Length: 231
Image 1 (spheres, rainbow, N blue to C red):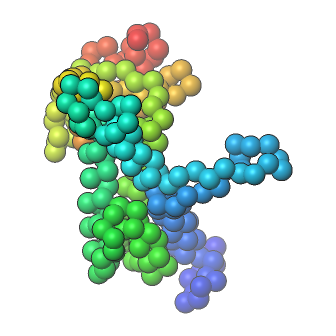
Image 2: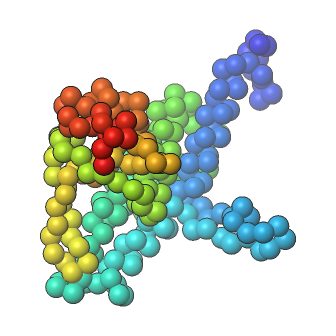
């Protein structure tokens, strides 16, 4: 591997890793804030449709639940998609703080504008800061997709392992405006097997490899569920 040289064309391992990191950050921020063409969903030669940014898709969840056919009938105008509302607010605050960390502030004050502002700063952002933030932006992409395109979920009894959360129940509202409750923790599935776990209160997530370590504090049947012996 070549030694580091002070040049944009440096091919040392450290510079290669940093370049990959900046590409990951750009991909995540781009998915969050930019529309994109989807030629992969149409036949060759057909016009590719435009997919909304993930932030726009999350905003649509709020719009669709706050008006139109999905208005809560018991309490007119009440948005029942509380999870989307909480996610939108959390993402807005995080991206807002990220921009301010870099000495700026984007107008208008929206999560999409803040993500675009960080995207513009990427070439000069400190790599250490970027290494801390990129996994969070990638997680937001996964979390929004999981909410917009829900997959199979299995409720799990137990308290959230996140020490800053610790909740065991999740509260929301149905389409009639009535309060509903369920377990805070749910298992997510992929290709017929458990892929991970998510807390619906704080949005923390754990991959499949971490779940056996948590089984003793969550649910005695969790091991069987992971093995596909329980549903």
